[in-house]
Structure formats: structure tokens, C-alpha cells
Length: 468
Ligand code: AMP
Ligand code: ZN
Image 1 (cartoon, rainbow, N blue to C red):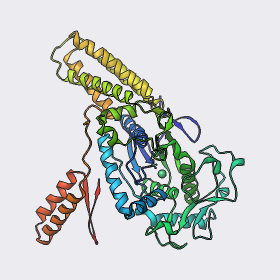
Image 2: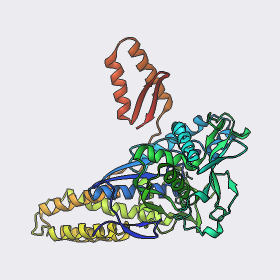
Image 3: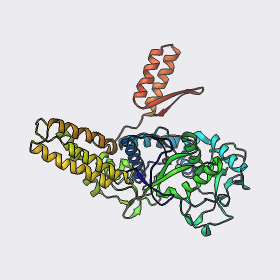
């Protein structure tokens, strides 16, 4: 059987066939870096991690892009409230985000483009849309996408064409489905934007949120790629608008599979900043909940089902992770040699895990296959029936499963955030070393930082650094 995913666009499960055989290009909408991400956000990022890890388990080579929204209504508002520059604010939360991903053992994406690095390309796409007749300028120097010009507008979110509000427009980045109308590609400068502004053919201003993802995805993955993900709240208007922008600008198909994860809830309400019912990773870890339990809790409910956050679930998660770890430890120290080779059990476990996960990432089915194997293996070891080579093949399979679950070897503590002052000091030492022509020392400093996941970029304005 082939891998099947529920495609939001067709509202049914479809066989997954990547555009290039064996290779998957996926774009995952990233965080808006104006605050710590909450564990509701991490539910979506965890689903994307599971998706990627499972595709890799199935032998596919995945290229993942995750953007960082570092300019939008929220980031600008917060930086003004705090009295700091936009980049000061967003740098702090970009760093925190990368540390959280490490803590949760989420694989790093291959690219983390930040919106502010792609404004020139955004202006280009908007000009393109304007020249093709899909966009128009308003009196305040903003540019809007005219949804009437795109026949497929509303197909992703299944909008009723009768309900779309014609001849009106919306400049906010977020709005409700009922209020579908022309949306801002470029926002003319307003007083409240402070220092945040770029020159453009329409005067100074800044990009809208939706154009950011159309540009960064196509720049890094090509006009037409395989998978685009996010939480269900991204379906409308964000992803609907991305499709409109990308298809109308490139004239090509945009994304083949749209996958969306359901909400993490608190007392049956969406966990969100606006409802102030959220927990950050740090909140939970400061209360003594280990990272592996949080990972397990977020991972083990099917991504299209709502998940109610509870402390009880975290306790159960700890037990489940411990059960797997104890099993693997026991296999590794098993020193008897019975007659059971475990061949059939290993084959069965792998095939039922794969069959379940192929079915739109049915994680409960996948875990049932693993825990059946654990039960059988524990008994075979307790009875001394298991052969030495059987123990080895069980532990090899558990390692393969752990490429997907990624809990066996993860630490339970909080990852260090990168210490910007330390990195800056090392960069200064390297500059001095280069001035002294001590290139060996300069290389050592670069290599040491690289080992800690920091990449140095030499620019005409000096050396910059980023998290790899
Ligand atoms: P944001 O930083 O608001 O742009 O959100 C980042 C990601 O988290 C988006 O893909 C959202 O759809 C997702 N998200 C936000 N709240 C939740 C939630 N309570 N449960 C699951 N995903 C969420
Ligand atoms: Zn996006």
C-alpha cells in the first residue's frame, strides 16, 4: 500500500506521490517571533516533525523549509510596546525558538528564512501580480489582491462564493472566513509602523503576512512543490491567500498536498495567546515536567484530532516513554541465548507499524504495533526464550522506530539558549586573530562555534552569526 494523506484541498485521503521520485519538498509555516511559542504552536511543529521523520523512515529524502515571521502586525505592535527595535525583539524569540526545538528533539528544518530577508523578492512578486492584473493600489499606498480575478479563490477553505464580501478589502493579516475579501499584499506606511519600512514602487511600507510565505516557499523550494503544512487556523485566510498569490504570479500549480493539524485545547478552548490560556515549554519544564513527556504527549494523538492538554496526560506520557526505554535497556544487557529468533515478530511489528502510519499517520495504530512487540519481547526475555541475535534484531528495530518517535535518547532538560554575548566575544577574538594573521586561531574559533550549532557569516559590515 502507498502512503495516504488527508489533503485539505480535496477533503479526502489521497495517495502520496512526490513530484520527483524519492524526494519530498515541504514547507511548514513557522512561528511569529514576538514572544515564546506556546505548546499549542509546538503541537503543530511536532506534527510536522512526525510527518518528516516518517517520510524519512519510508526512505524518502525530505527538504524542509520553515519560515520565521519577523515582520507583521503582531511583531511591530509588540516591539513598540516594549520600546525596542523590531530586530531586537525578533532576534530574542528566534533564539528561544531554536532552543525549544532542540529541547523537544524536533529536527531542524534545512532552511529558516526570515521574512525581513526577502522583502525585495516580495516586492517583485507583488509587481508581477500587479502587471498581470491581479492586484491594485489603494489611496494609502497599499496594494491589494483582487480575489474576484482568481477563479479558484476559496477552494482550499471551501468557501461559498455567495458569501464572499465583494468590493471590500481588509488590511489586517488575520480575519474570519465570513469576511473573505480583497487582502493586503503591501501595506502603505502608517505612523504605528515606527521605523519599520521599506521603499517600494508604491512608496514606503511593508509586506503583508501572506505574501511572505508565497515568496519564501517558492524561492527555496521552487514554484511547485509537494507538501505545505500548518495548523488548521492557517487554512483561512493564510493558505488560501498563499495559493492565490503563488498561482497567479507563477502561472503554475503551487502545492500538491495541504496538511493541517488540529488544535491543542485547554478546557476545550484553543490554546492561544489571545485567550491567555497558554503554557510555554519553559512554564511546563519549570513546573517539573520533562521535555520527553511533553514531546510524547504532543506526538501521540492523531494530528487531525483535537487534543485537550492535561497534566494527567503528561504523567501517562512519562510512563510510556519509560516503558520503551526500559525495554531497550533490557535488550542491550540481555545475556541469555534462547531459541526464539524474533524474526516473525520483528517483521510483523514493522509491517503493522508501517501500515498504520501509511494511513495518514495513524499514530495509535503505529504505537499499538510497537507495544505489542515490547510485550512479546519482555516475556521472551523473562522466560529466557529469546536468542542473542533476536535481542539484537529487536533493538535494531526499536532504533528504527525511534527515528520516528525520537524519545529514546532525548534529554529531559531545557536546552541552553545561545549566549549572544559569548558569541559576540568570540567573534571579536576571531577578528583580532585575523588582524594578527593568526588564521589557525581564527579557524578554531569558527569551528568551535560551528560545533555548538552557530554559523558565522562574514559580510562587508562585519561578521554576523546565525543558528544553523
Ligand atoms: P503563529 O506563531 O501564531 O503564527 O503560529 C504558529 C503555528 O502554530 C501555526 O501553524 C498555527 O496554526 C499553530 N497553532 C497556533 N495555536 C495552536 C494550537 N492551539 N494548537 C495547535 N496549533 C496551533
Ligand atoms: Zn505561512
